[in-house]
Image (tube, rainbow, N blue to C red; front, side, top):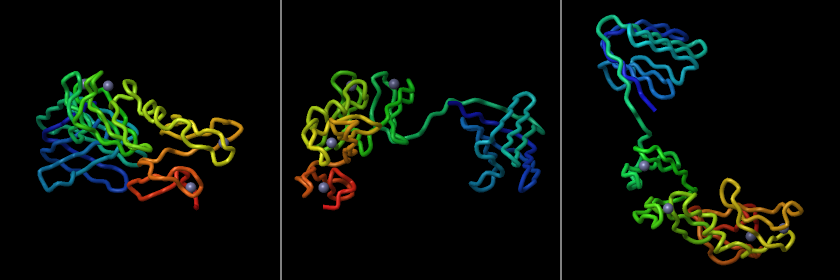
Length: 237
Ligand SMILES: [Zn+2]
Ligand SMILES: [Zn+2]
Ligand SMILES: [Zn+2]
Ligand SMILES: [Zn+2]
């Protein structure tokens, strides 16, 4: 992902709801999603901007930038000396240790990404990234509650949460509709689904929490961040 930076004496024209022409020595950011932000020396707000335009044309020499989105447009032309540079940028996130490649890992937007090799690992809901490293691949381990607390590798391919939860809870609970066993399956997240599917379509998402006894309906009850609840989110017992 690269961010382009245009700096120098420019004419900036906006068209659409508000037509303006501005000239000044500005710094323009063109982000990887083509969002254009024109910053001048005044205050923190951009002097002009266009968010994720449908079309963007940028020629460096001579500078010619046109961004169009529906009725809105933004045009930038050089009036004096202007530089256009390209910078490699990444998501910014909370540092969570090191990748086996030696690069830093950061957590943002529900995933952990390496800033050097671009490896990306989606996190299961409610996961905490631990200081401990996986004995096989060296990535950090994560702690996830699905019935009880499991510590598995950040990399699903290396040590799957599914396998750990399956080993502990597969066929542990009975289907309230037909009495069959509930199997631990992965359908996006983890679910406890009836073994008699498709004859019986009973299935429950395994909550982010630990088992704390039994509900009156005989399914397990979970302690979660949001309080105590039945495996069946719709259970009224
Ligand atoms: Zn890496
Ligand atoms: Zn691993
Ligand atoms: Zn069933
Ligand atoms: Zn219940």
